[in-house]
Amino acid sequence: MNDAAQTLRRILADVLDGLPPRQAATAVDRLISTYRGAPPTHAPILRDRADVAAYAAYRMPATFEAVRTALAEFADAVPEWTPADHTDVGGGTGAATWATAATWGGVRPVTVLDWAEPALALGRELAAALPELADVRWQRARIGSALAVEPADLVTVSYVLNELTEPDRVALVDAVAGAAQAVVIVEAGTPAGYARVIEARGRLVAAGFKVAAPCPHDDACPIVPGEDWCHFSARVSRSSLHRQVKGGSLAYEDEKFSYVAATRLPVVPAASRVVRKPQIRKGQVLLDLCEREPALHRTTITKRHGDLYKAARDASWGDVWPPAGLLADGES
Ligand SMILES: C[S@@+](CC[C@H](N)C(=O)[O-])C[C@H]1O[C@@H](n2cnc3c(N)ncnc32)[C@H](O)[C@@H]1O
Image (cartoon, rainbow, N blue to C red; front, side):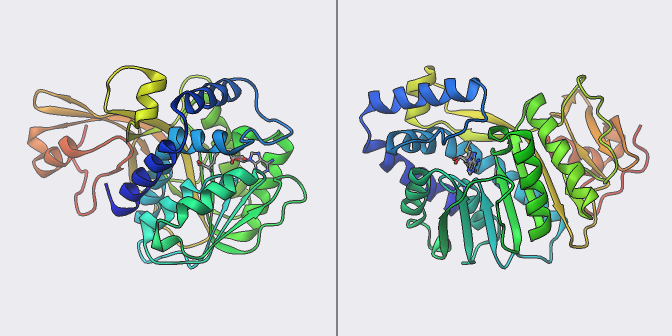
C-alpha cells in the first residue's frame, strides 16, 4: 500500500469511529438497496453526513483502488506525462483525487464537481489529511446539458455514469471530451457497467481521442455484446464496517471494474492486454489476450519460452502483454 492508500484507510477509520455502528450499518443497507434499485434519481442519493460517512467508509477504498489501477495503466501508456491539473466530475468524497495523487504525486490544482453538498464537505475534510490535496476546489454542480467543464489536463469520472439518465451521460462525456487532454472513466465491472464504458469510449474516439488503456486499439471492442464483458479486478482490504455489514472474516475483497482511459496525447498502445485471470498449469500458463487486430485470443506459454514463461507466471489480469523488453515470438 502506498502513502495515499494508507492515509485514506486511517482517516476513513476515524470517520467511522465518529458514527454509531448501528447508524453506519443502516446507512450502508439503505445505500446498497438504492444502488440495487434503479438510479438515476432526480435528487442526490447521498443526503446527509451519515450517508456520506457510510459511503466513504464502505465504498471509497474500493473506488479508490479501481481508479488507481486504471490510472496506473494509463500512466504506463503516457510515461512522459504528468497532469498539470485535474477535474473529477461526480467526484463525491474524492476517491479519484486520492487515486490521482497516488499515481503522479505532487500538488496540482484539482476541481471536484458534485451535486451532493454533504459528499463535498466530507471530501474536503478527508483531503486535509493528504498534503498532495492541498489545492482542491469542492464545487457544487449538477451533471446535465448545462454542465460546464473548464479545460483540464485530466478529467476523471468514476462510478458516476450509472447514476445518470442517458441524455445526461451523453452530455457529460461530450463535455469532458471538449475540456480534457485525458479522460479516465471507471464503472462497476458488470455487463451494464461495461456497456456504459463502451458507449463512452465510442464517443471519445469519435471526438478524436485515442484509447490508451485497457484496449490496445481504437477499433470496435471484439467482445460480442451479451456474451461477455471486459472488466478487471483490484484487491481491497476490508474495513471493520465491511465485516459488520457483510459478515465473515475475509481480510480483503476484489473490486471488479470496467474502465477506459483515452487521450489526445500521443500514446503507444499495448501490444495486447491480459483480460482474464491467467491460468497457471504444470509447465504452462494460459493467457487470454485482447490484441491489436482487434481480436480476443488465448495463448499458451510453456517452459520452452524461457524468460517469457517466467514473465507469464508473474502476469496478472489487466497487465500489458508481453512486458516491455520481451518479444512474444513463438507463442502458440
Ligand atoms: C457512486 S458515487 C461515486 C463517487 C466517486 N466518484 C467515487 O468514485 O467514489 C456517484 C457520485 O455521483 C454524484 N452524482 C450523481 N448524479 C449526479 C448529477 N446529476 N450531478 C452531479 N453529481 C451527481 C453523486 O452525488 C455521487 O457523489
